[in-house]
Image (cartoon, rainbow, N blue to C red; front, side):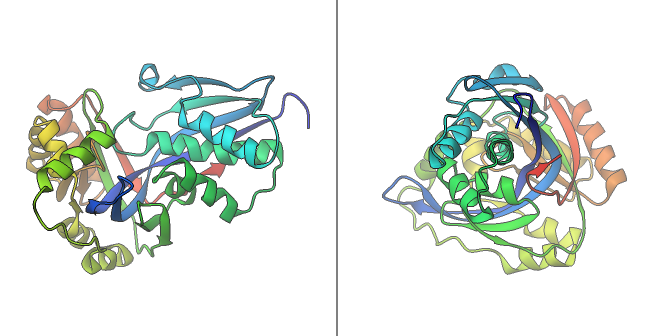
Length: 301
C-alpha cells in the first residue's frame, strides 16, 4: 500500500423515533429502549496514510468540533490501532453535513466512519462483530452509525436489533443556535424525575408496527422522546420551533435525541418542503434540513 492510499466513508445522521429512558444506573448511564432511524444527511470521513495522527475538517459548523485527539474520530483511529498493535498514523479529514451537537449523532457518525475507513486503509481485516464491539467502546450511538437502517438499541443504546422497514419517511430538521450537552440533558432528566417511579424502558409495539408497515400516520402518532421535557427545560425556546412545525402541517414533531435539533415528520416530500420553508420563515431556528429515511450505515465510497 502506498503512502497516497486514501479511503473515504460516508456515514448517516440518525433520528430517534422512540427514546424511552429508564432510571439512572449505578454507573451513571441509563437503560434505554432507543429506536434509531438513519436519515439521509451525511458526514464523510477520509483517511489517508500519514506520519502522525491528524484531524482536519470542512463544512457546517466545523469551528465547533475539536481538531485534536479528543475528537471521537481520532479516538476511533487510536482504538483500532491499539487493537491491532500498530501506530495510529493517519490523516482524518471530516466533511461535515450533520448538525454539530444537535442530537443527530454527528460525532458518533464520524467515529464509525473513521473506524471503517482506517480498517480499510490499514487492511486490519476486522470482522463486523469486532468493529461493532469497538463502536460500543467509543459511545452508545456509534454502533448504529455503523449499521444504519432502523434498529432498536437496548442497554445504553449500544445493543442493537435490526428492525424491518416497510417504506420511506420524510423528515424536516430544524437546527437551533448552539448545542445541548447530552450529559446535561440526562442530568436534567434525572432532576425532573427525582422521587418518581421511572418505568423500565420498552419499545412501543405500535411504533415498531408502523415502521414495518411504512405507515407515516401511525408512526406520527407513536413518536416519543423521554428526554424532550429535559431538553425543553434547558432550552425553552425549542417549544416555539416545535409549534411552528406543527402549525406548518407536520404530522408530528419532537426533539431529536438530546436536542437541540427538532425533527418533524411530514406526510410526503412536497409537504416536507412546505414545512421546511415555514420553519425557516418563522425565525425560530437557525437553519432547516430536509431528508428521507431510511439510509444505509457507514459505507466506503
